[in-house]
Image (cartoon, rainbow, N blue to C red; front, side, top):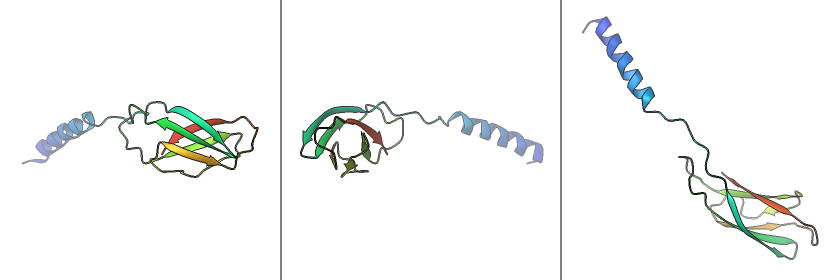
Amino acid sequence: MNKAVLRALFAVFAVIISLNVEAAKEPDAPSIGTASAGDAQATVTFTAPASNGGSTITGYTVISSPADGVDSNVGTSSLSHVITGLKNGTPYTFYRYSD
């Protein structure tokens, strides 16, 4: 084959490859189901997102606001996380993130 034919085949092959590549999508928004208060801790349960956006979710992290809490299950795939280090009587908001 001559160089012109090889270049043409390479150009067609490159176009085919680029057409088959999809951009990554954001996973669906996380959903916290319940947060149950305990003594200086809370148990936060949630559901997995309906769509992971095409990427495997390897774990979840829950953070608190105010930021007193420590997720004792950080980075695990568990759908129930115990947040410790909270101050009794303080209202908290919890956020879950996918890793």
